[in-house]
Length: 308
Image 1: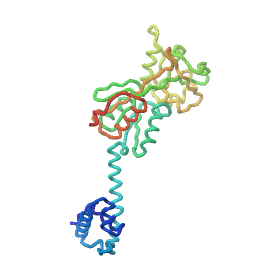
Image 2 (image 1 turned 45 degrees about the horizontal axis):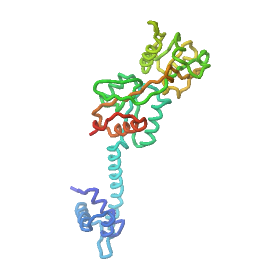
Image 3 (image 1 turned 90 degrees about the vertical axis):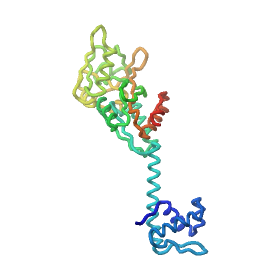
Image 4 (image 1 turned 30 degrees about the horizontal axis):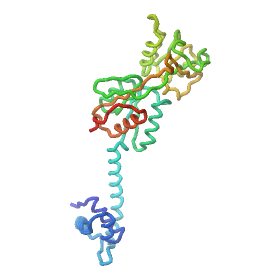
């Protein structure tokens, strides 16, 4: 059975390129005797001489020349494979799957994803947009590496950390009186009818409205629609209602709709985004992504121990 290794091929290629065992050994930083023995073993393994040896050096035989031509792409492929595996082990290649329950058309989430992809072009990034419960199930099965969720997050079995905050904005029909203002305040929104998607992030925004606008047991008028976030905004221009969106949704434009920042007593209204991941996820790309986010937003959470 024919048996040889990449090291032997590498030695033979170097000898053929340099026309000398001595020069090939110096280039590869090995003993000439080590290189010579390895090539002799290779020749015995394939059953024919690769080189003609003389005092002037070595030249390839006719069969040896064909063998070297075939060996070069094999060694190049092996080198590429090793480099790829090292990159994957360091999180510079491989794959990373993000779970999202909010839009990425603008805001910090989009900026973070774009910057990460620019810095790590060899990492294949996949995205799953779904409700929180589906994303958490994906984390549990390992189909998702990290879920980035609007609002606070705390779930048994997962590491959950706050990441960043984004502004909240009112999506208003152009005909709405508040559309003429640069900003609107929470107090301006009392008495309005809110149209929100029943799917994420609608429930999170509903809870925010209930906390901000409920006065003397009078709850705000909130309609949860069995429609996507995009559909709600697409038909909003022709309705008498308004909607609330996070900054990540404002990169998309819809007919007869304007966005106005919401302010409270302390300034712009903000909502946080959190990251959740499995503590036992050993994907190196996830570690580098967490390091990237931690540095970008000057966060203080510690995760090093989970990857040891």
